[in-house]
Picture 1: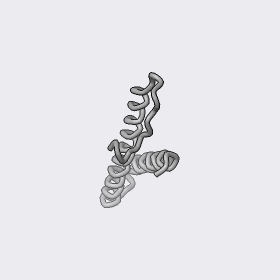
Picture 2: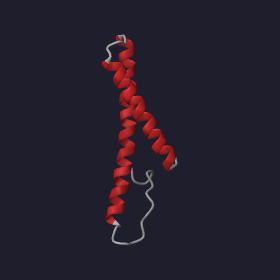
Picture 3: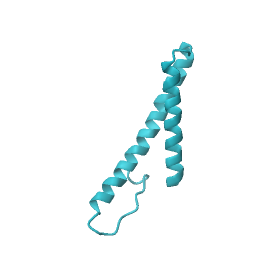
Picture 4: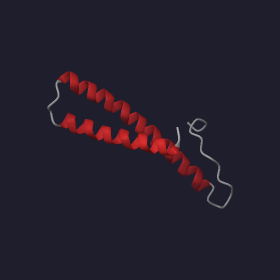
Length: 80
């Protein structure tokens, strides 16, 4: 997945998560709908956390290399 796709995917997931939270807080969902929304929210939250963890790792790599050495490319497949 490209960086732009990852960022867009993250932002879409975050927006959807926000919508789910609003729906859950409205108390307008049936118990079954609320459980489905909660389950989807947990999945979206985990996906967002994964992207944030990868970004944090990339920042750490960049900070460690800030003394002017060649910056290595971050590969989430290798660093997860």
